[in-house]
Image 1: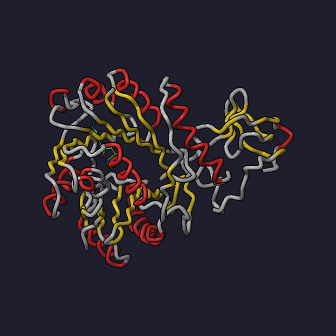
Image 2 (image 1 turned 45 degrees about the vertical axis):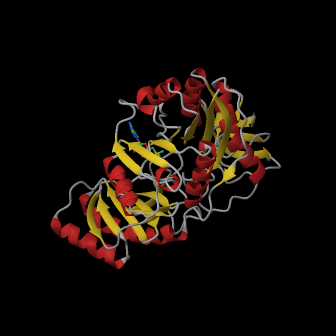
Image 3 (image 1 turned 90 degrees about the horizontal axis):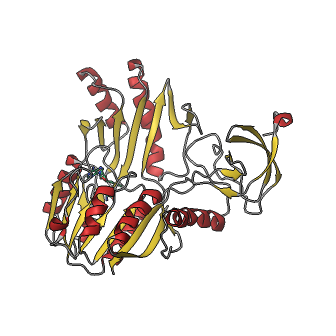
Length: 408
Ligand SMILES: C[S@@+](CC[C@H](N)C(=O)[O-])C[C@H]1O[C@@H](n2cnc3c(N)ncnc32)[C@H](O)[C@@H]1O
């Protein structure tokens, strides 16, 4: 940190940005600096590189990972827990304020649990790991303390897969998911591989006891069907399918959604994925699920047919950006849950605003697009009763939230 001090500026850090950078007047963004600190930083445009801490914050703590500041996986490990939790909750408060929305924001729910069950490892030129902070270079790790232990064991398998595929000379991503029946790995970037390579990859899957190995969704070998559980229902997700990053977030988000639906009997689950909410809630509610991802909808449907004791569940492939459910189509439902990708659900929110539903629950991984969509619902006559931030990407700038709306 003490190199090039002669070219540095003294900066007073005022706040923490949404990516976890300290922000000084200007603005100048200084990664790893904290509010209240006086720092020396090398400044180029809006970017500052922390060179020395002159007055550290009382909230500064020792990061627990030796790769912190080098690895791009974590942005904030150096902040005390209460200050960290206030910052994350504050990201949601700020996004609502920017959209002119007043609503109670609950304390942050910690949903890290045992750690992340999904990770995308990058493999380039013989190296396997995460991207370096602000770079495409790879940080090689023996273990990552943020992941569930089963995924850490997958690092060895990932290195062996990279070695096998190195001759292709292509940058690869390896999407690893820890499931109940073992690790599921989807290779991205290899393109089509010949039969000889498939056999060698299958051998590696056996050697490392992978449940399934696929190449961009094309199953190379399935030794056991990967399984996750939503409520009491077992689902076999398609290769690389969306799943909440931690099992605890799954449970926490589902409980908040259930609470917000307030005993509804018939609901629509929009952007359902392979059924995180639909299948868990079908113990008490008739559910119609919609998502544009065909394999995810098929997995949801298969799981619902196999499960015992559920209320009726239907699953439909539909692009809700281009063909949102219309107000007329929403009439049969007492309530709706929607959980779109980061871009939000603007087209669908306009239709929800025009519908006369009693309850709507929005789940989001992007407070800014959530606030935009929430403003549409509020303009359409709904009240945002409460918003609960949920932290499943601990130490990163990402935050999930659940917003509960009622018709006024
Ligand atoms: C944040 S995930 C939520 C999935 C699910 N609710 C869960 O918790 O597992 C967003 C989902 O939106 C789906 N999606 C993305 N674009 C879509 C579109 N245009 N129409 C419908 N679904 C879409 C994705 O396939 C993905 O399943």
